[in-house]
Length: 190
Image (cartoon, rainbow, N blue to C red; front, side, top):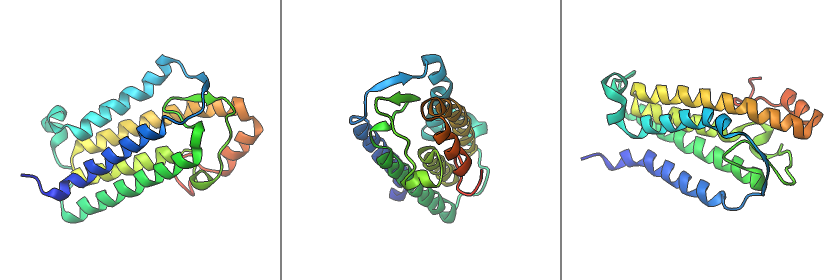
């Protein structure tokens, strides 16, 4: 039987998914969206990552191996990173409001958000999710967690390129200035 604390990380992710779904019900109408092929290039790696993190039987013996010794310290560090990352992404989602979308879109009456977490990074939702996945990987201490993290990094970097092109087309020099002033994912790193 698993220790009850082992359910912390799945519980955090489940609460986040429930919030994310509920918040998605109050967004602005879409004016322009990326193509289905474009979306697939970041959605498929995200889905593979979710399967790797959530289903050890799928990963196989190589990816189930440990990249570090699992300990209480690594587990609780992972839990803290998951909690911090998911909370940061929720805060960013709140500040983004009706402009949010799971796909790359422009909304009707789209506005450029530069407050809250958007003062520190241009893509704080991605920053928070990456931090949470890093925490999940540390708590697991298995290669599948690091592979999942790498896939999500790839997916988000690809999605950021598309998203920023939409923002430049919509906001022009205002967004270019924002790009020069605020890093994409990691505070203090341009």
